[in-house]
Length: 393
Image (tube, rainbow, N blue to C red):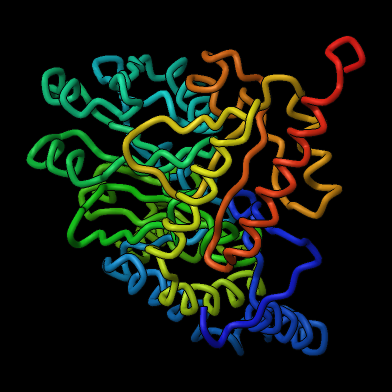
């Protein structure tokens, strides 16, 4: 991250899976826009930044993911981007939607609600014994009834990574649309949509892309845009014609946007996206491996790390200490991490009886010293816990 400046009051910031630390340059871009907006008004300020909001941020995303610029639609969150896109599909009772045990609860809730109205079936792809999404099972069971395959690139509860290439090949020349929730992987893992095409990829700007909160986006293939029609439409992308019919003002993915947005946040996101081009993926993977392996050696600490490929996130519980006090002790010691709810990844965590866990997440600005400090604190907590008799605890 050469040439980019960061500040934090934490001794070890390991909460990038929640929100990454923005660079000084990103924060300044947001502040500069808000200052101008306060002086001349929001409409004129947006007009002054039109190059960024109408072209620059789209170009930055297209370059980062190696996709056409007209495939990008902006949103205020990854969840909103996913919901808005999938809601535009005309699913029927003859259709099947495939999900995985790593699906984010927000996406599952949407699908359950949509199922009541449309009548489609929801089936879960099993995991292999190692914990990977079973692509061989998919090859044996896929047919033309499978309208949607919903894949989570990296779940919010663990750093298991599902390679996209086998699933991209699986749906080639089929009617099945491949959607990818890249909320945790964007900025953490290289994603080349020209080499590995998917039909829908959604993500947020606030995590490993280190952008402001309130930013999200979708990248839609041409065939997805042909299959879907936005449920909510706005005057900047649609218009009435004489006779009352509606015509599209654009054939791009922007049809799925609404006109109102936090312009300041997208100005900051554009800066963050250009900086994200220099993310060192191998370095992050190495630090993630150190964190996972060293945490796994601490007595009493259990690291939940299924699957073959890992990076970015570890989820831990302790044999003798509940997750909430463990999290509080880490935060008091200056380790920024997060207490996660098992219900947010219900088909993985809750099935394993994990109602809460502590999540630690490496990001583009994480240093080896931060890993050392966090491991030292975990070892100290584990040592103190082991020294207290069970009845006293």
